[in-house]
Image (cartoon, rainbow, N blue to C red):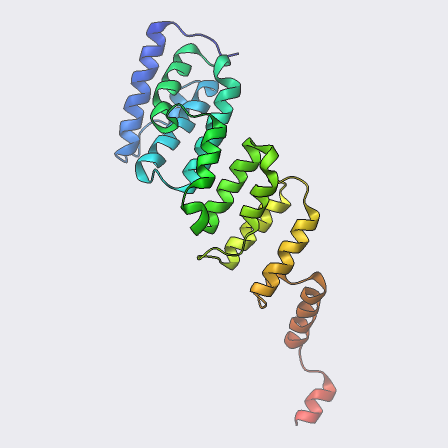
Length: 224
């Protein structure tokens, strides 16, 4: 439970926070760090809010921002009541223009329906994670969205990111789907090492070692 600070203490810390933020935005190398001015337990949600607001100003439609906003809102749903009342009031007020009264479920559904989720592999992966996290009954749809290979900007790195997410358990247990995805990626990118089976990787490693090995006496004699 967060301790409740006297009103005058809260005001002082707000002023310190505002001054530190101005100094940091102006690139002042001697600007104090925010976590030095705000008690640790209070700093975490406030710093997260600050990061989200800055990202929202830069690119309100970015898929990573939507993912972070959803995670933060989900965290608030579970922890807002336990926050310092003054901190809770600030966070609620500041995040409302971005959340616009929507629940995490509504935000996840809208995230999936955005045009970017159909055109961009990275956006689709973020949307799929959000869908799986906030709407478990639609786990299959989330998995299909993440593992589709029909995106215009499909890339080897994008597929590797999806594969890492699958292996990390973001979509729950899905060993069969992981194998199917690797096979599909292998057909799409036949020369990509990331999707080659372990046996082929072992052969490639052996060939590389053989190529780098110094000539043997018989080879030297033949070459001469």
